Image: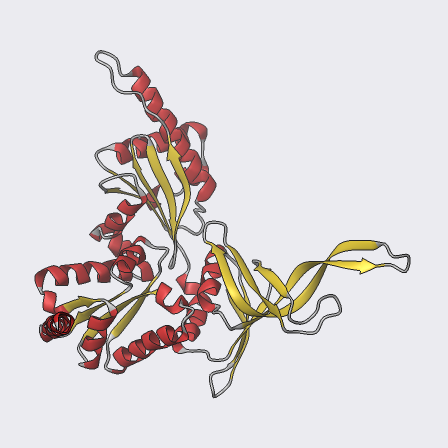
Length: 390
């Protein structure tokens, strides 16, 4: 994404003009736009004109409109972002106050105006416009008859294709049908990789499976590549990494990305940090539960005591339509950073973000144990019980 222009005032109100260039940029925009913001963009609207003879003609007109955002709809697979709201700019074709839906497009400027640009929104703009933080990992998690071909970006895990192919069982004395079925399945995987993975961008292609399915698939792909002279595979063979995982389902990608050999290659990516940090949190929760807390109340109390070493937050929390909810999490982020703590904002479109959302979307690893947080909660629950019985 390109930042065309930025104008932020001292009171934090202001605008940015952005130019989205690829699918992930639309995810950043989705996280930037909040209800109550103003959006200015080129859009198409059907208008009706009445001629002097009384006939009504309908035509589609491209015009620039500014709306106050009331509803945001995003399709992560297609990258479609639709913003609905009331028109607040004068225009000869439409009346002020009427509703319009703007569909933001790639390779087309738009202007976003906010009454307050908080620190999370500004960081999102900087991250989206940093060309060094682009996607460069592809992964195929598979088992016999099932494969998920994925692209792993900084903020999204996109399943480009799910492949399901029935494979006949091995029969006593004959495995011909089984081997034919397996070869057809591997061929579908190979074609999907060719179709969905750009080897000029991708640095690593992970093949992961239980057992030897990954090895068989790898051997099939490169045997066919040699036979058919498929240069994309032959020239990029060194990018393929084979890793064990428990299944061919998308969730197995989490364990794949925790593998030390993969971590070395992904050490500079945001997603790698998310995976490692979440792993550390679960380990701490198991080994030293007084140094790992989740849920707003517990994490807030830990923050008030200046105990948070690492704060884990889901980006869903900052998309809340409730301004007070968003502000309390921003204040928590600022307080943790003020004492030298680390803050990681997890993407809800990654498996790690999905796991964090199951833990309410907020968690923390502490510098020192705070058993009193649990004790305080128990005392509060006991007092509530006493009040209810009386």
